[in-house]
Image (cartoon, rainbow, N blue to C red; front, side, top):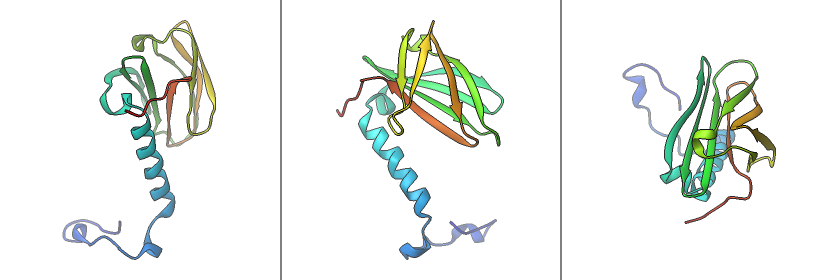
Length: 132
């Protein structure tokens, strides 16, 4: 939204659809769909997994459903290994439900997760999906 410091911070929402940021709207709708699809994103226990400067990884777990959320706020791409054993994941694959990409987990570590600049990823245990 347009605006600035007070009193410019109180501008009204632009109800004319042609003025909307449609890319942002599509992204928010994707996030809402993920949250509705995976119970752990709404009700799971929160577990901090990894933090280093511009990178942050946390997990959510409820019952047998596990989600890993990775954020890169840096202006360059990053490749990281992140511990996920605290979520009960020691081996296997984590799936990016948006792209279908699969990321390996070995010895309790998510291996070589690639994050574009100023981006994030939501990964789930492969094959786990619930709409409760």
